[in-house]
Length: 110
Image (cartoon, rainbow, N blue to C red; front, side, top):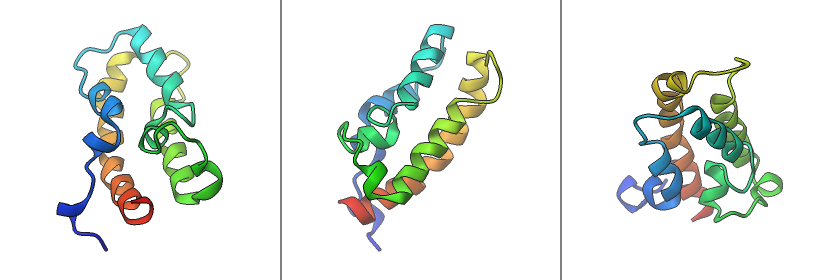
């Protein structure tokens, strides 16, 4: 197991998603963009960690699972999700999953 002080942090692995998840007020249009980006294998959180390469879908089952989990958090069952709902609830769910993903990525792919 890699010590946490040697790990590449989320801010370095996914700088764009790190910025996006810190936005305080998300508009309806921004929420649509977030949903689209998270639904694409090359632009989701996992895809950004892999520098836009979607080969992880075939090469690493755990990374594929993380991509699916992140996507399902963003794409709730609500037909017209409120951006405020994403900001208050969904971001917390994403933040809880990030350390697990970062640990996996550092242990297996770095």
